[in-house]
Every structure is written in structure tokens, then in C-alpha cells.
Image 1 (spheres, rainbow, N blue to C red):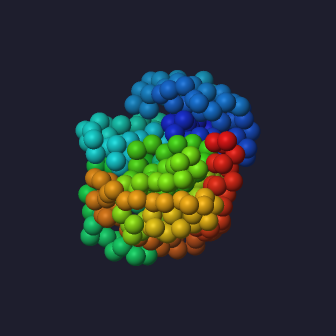
Image 2 (image 1 turned 45 degrees about the vertical axis):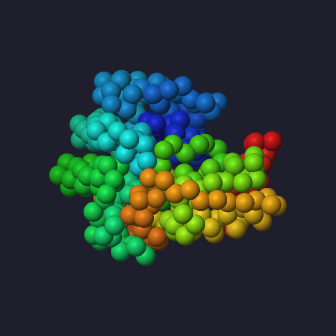
Image 3 (image 1 turned 90 degrees about the vertical axis):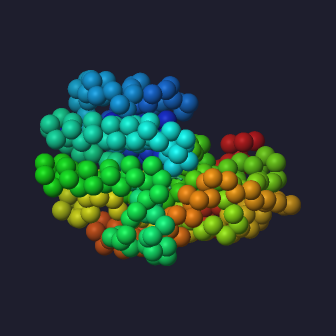
Length: 314
Ligand code: AKB
């Protein structure tokens, strides 16, 4: 049977670019995008409206398109989740159980589920955070990601479900807007710099966080899903490192492209979340197991973001 992919949450920040990447690699008709709302981006392949918590609705799509792999991206991110912890838990966990169960029942063969650096917390070693270490998250988003990782490992061990996951750092891209995360400032800064020549950061100047340019994240996601099963030794979530930087450091790079650019700082409730997360990540397990290697450093990422966003916003 040929590969048929369903992406749930395809209109979000990762979904938009992942669908594009998957369609480029496996063909437009072999990738079904789905979301709770109509897509903004023009679709080159099938699209289905579905709520990620609607088991019957998802099953109908799986049957109709003879889906073999599901990428589940629907979730409430760290900052938004803090506004409604009960709903965040419900959405983030119920949707995961639905796809894990579909895989356990043999209705799909492989599952991708995104984890996050949010599984770590204030007691985690902050620099070069190891793959296996203390993980006591202080946000509901982090708790849902940590519990989700354990459920993925459980379904793999107990039922042989082929589920794979990455602990994404903050993701930066120009094709889609970020949706309610603590790392969103690193996308907003580009939009505000190009439009207004200034930006007020909701994180303080020296708040260093792990980040990654979206093309690296999309490549990592597809590479992990395409790796032979025996090479995927971590069935919780893989640490993945790209670039670590602070608002002050990215502002200096942005200023190379926007003369007179200024940044101010007005930390809000997201500062406490950022302070609980690592500064940098040890991703040696992903490198050793399935050959992960990032391509973009801070300068290369900023250069590409500026060229593309200036064109888009013109
Ligand atoms: C967030 O800030 O909530 C996300 C994440 C790091 O998972 N970008």
C-alpha cells in the first residue's frame, strides 16, 4: 500500500509548512491537510475540516483516504494554554489518544506527535540540557507534553505502535504566524521591524532560549518519520537543537537589515515560562540515531527571514 498522510492541525505555524514539505516529497494527492478552520493558504491537495477531538470525524477521513500515517499538530501552546489549563489538557491529550488508539487498532501505521522543550522545567539543567534529565514542567502545556511523551512510549512498548516525536524549540518562519507560544517574539520582531522599525519584546533582553528556523524543523520531522524503525531508539521525544539566542542578540542581527531599528523590553507573564526553560539543548541522540544536523545559524536564519518577509509584506 502506498503512503497516504493525514496532517491534523494543518493551518497552524508548523502545519502550513509541513504540509508543503510533505506534498513536495510525497505528492500533493498523498497528503491530506485537515484543520478545524478553513485554510488560509491555497491548497494543492485534499483538505478536510475536522476537530482534533472528534474521533469519528478523524476515522472517517482515515477510511476515505486510506491514510497510513498521521501527523497530529493540533494543540494549545504554552502561553495560550495558561489562560485555559483545563481545555489545554483536554485538547492536547484527547487528540493524542485518538491517534494512538487508531494506530493500536491497526487503522494507521505510523504517528507523529510534536513534543516541546516545555517538558523541561526550572529544576532542569539549563545549558546543553541532556536527552534524559530532570523534567518537572511548570506549565500546563509542558505537563501535557511530558505526559504525552510517556503515553507515546507506553503505546510503543505495550502495543508496538510506531509513534515518533521531537521536542521542538521555538520555531521561526515567514510563511505562517505563530500561535500563542512563549517563543513567538522571535517571529513578531521581524514583522514589527519591517513594518514599524521598532519592537517591544515581551521577554527581557538576556532571555536565551533554544530556537530553530522552520526549514530545519520540517526537514528534521520528515527525516525522523522516514528513518528505519530500528534507528528510532527514543520513543518519548527527541531533543533537537538549532540556534540559541536572546532578544538582544536577535535584535542586533535584525538591525543589520533595518537601519535605525530599536527594541524595547516589557516582560509579561511569558517571562516566567521562558525562565523555566533550557537555554540550550544537547541533541546528540538525534544526531547519532537518525543523522540530524541543523543547517541554519542565527545570521543565515535572519538573512533568509528578512529577504522573504520583506517581499511578502511589500
Ligand atoms: C511555545 O513557545 O509554547 C512553543 C514551544 C517551545 O513549544 N513554541
